[in-house]
Amino acid sequence: MSLLKPHFEFDVLESALSFAARLAAFHTGGRLTAFLRDVGIAPMAMVSGEPEAIARLAEVSGTDRAALEHNTPIRVGKRAYRLRGHVLPAEFFARPKTAYCPACLCADDQTVGGHPAKVRRHRWFWALDVVRTCPEHGIALVRLDKDFHDGELLELGYRAPAPGAPLMAEIAAQPARPASPLQTYVVSRLEGQSGPAWLDAQALDCVVRAAELLGAVVAFGASVNLAELTDDQRDKAGRVGYAIMAQGEAGVRACLNGMFNAFEHGSSKPGPQKVFGRLYTAMSGARSFGKHGALTDILGEVIFDRFALEAGTEVLGKTLPERRLHTVASLASEQGLDPRTLRKLLIARGLVPSDEQVHHAFDAQAGRTVAAQMQRMVTVISLPKALGCSRPLADQLMDDRLLTPLAGDRPDASGRTRKAVAQDEIDGVLERVAQAAPLVTTAPADFVPIAKAAEKAKCHGVDVLHLLFGGHLLDAVRVEGEGLAALRVDPAAVKALVCDLLTGLSSQKAFEILRVPSEAGWALVDRGILSSRIIQSGQGSHVIHRFDADEVARVAANLISPSRSLELFGMGAESFSRHMRHARIRPAFSHAEIGADLYHRADTHRVLGM
Picture (tube, rainbow, N blue to C red):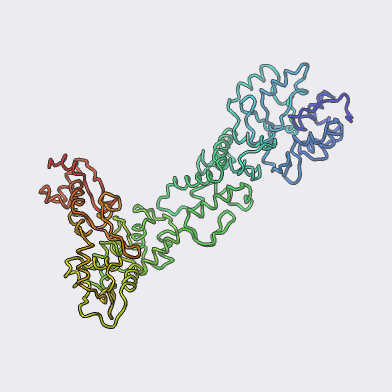
């Protein structure tokens, strides 16, 4: 039962403090401080949302206590308040400022016979710091600073402009804008509605803090100080940040990766603070842990994924268990390698771009694999000895892709990496020979080494190995000796297989006609420009390529390399290339792409008239 007569009705949109201010005006015609003291409530206890003060107000006014608490931040600890089931920090609220919409107050003033102090209601959601726009009238809220001791009492009948011209002028002065999506999300969630599931799973204050911080960095730069932003700037930050966070973890991660990619690294080694600025520093302090929700974890993972950090490095409260990324310098130091040679090899293997910045990071395990290959690298000079064969046969193995250079198919590889081979590759070839040719004490009298068999069959030594690896040459054996030099084959069998099976042109002959290096020729094959006839193996997955002369002639008629310019146009390769450059003709395939410049015949005809 109300102790105050007559009963004064509580509005479901207003806060308890607003209701108390209107009670004072209705029952005493005076101000709130004296009224609260008269009914046994300490004014600042009411401002602070002390449970006892709210209970006493409910008692004297005859109003349901739960209804008052529903719209009022109730203090539950030091700088902590409970509002509609959410425990929120003090900074979540606009206090000590008083926020209001002058257009809403103008509507309140239209109440018949109502004095502004009796009818002006402070809406409960105006107390939220994130609420800066009136959702009903689409104008910015007015925010009054606390300018005297009682400045937090929400007495809008006295602190806001008087009805009529003064209030209308204030309405006209407020910028028009829609409510921000972040504000709408917060109010809706406090009203019990659902939003994006990923955001709903986080504490409400963490969502707001993270959205405004992320949005501020995106909108105003990594060096922004959120505390120095104006209300309008924070409103913009919230709009930008919420648009990103509403996309969930994937959207946030994409944004952070975009910030990393956009950063100009220069020659110095950048750290997380340099790249992400305030976004990182605001979350890295001991007092900040947990205050930005899932954004902290995502940023930490992005840092682990993008920076070459040592195992055991701690970032935003989490420890990196093992290194994920290396730079050339860190990998060379770890593996005890020459960084210059290692860099060339990493470029060749595609882990580091050719225009690599000093601190470019790449996958640590992939880098260690390359480093291990480099440690067992066999240079082209040493290749014949490692294989136990002649120089021509070693070159043929490389040219026909039975051995893969450490540089792979990268035409921009340089130095020793261009033709060097990992020991594992060599071991693989020798193992295949061992599997296909059993070891014997004495070979049959008519069996000969590879080179002799190739000479008798009028083919290349690598063709003999193709026949062996493809399961077509079945009676080969090995005698005591090193590598391929120990292999003995039946020359008659080789000759018969070459005649019956290896018809057409070899890759060496086809690429010779085109006047392109082997890597360029195979690039044309891999791209479907030059067709080959595939000879499947009798066992296993070994493939032999042979080329029809007409197909090679077709490609040769359409694509011209500078190496053919002398026979076709009577000019040297340098002169030919210079003519094409001056005519601004780009190659159909460039050296950077495939290892040789190739021009369309139509372009050369247009430039040279031939």
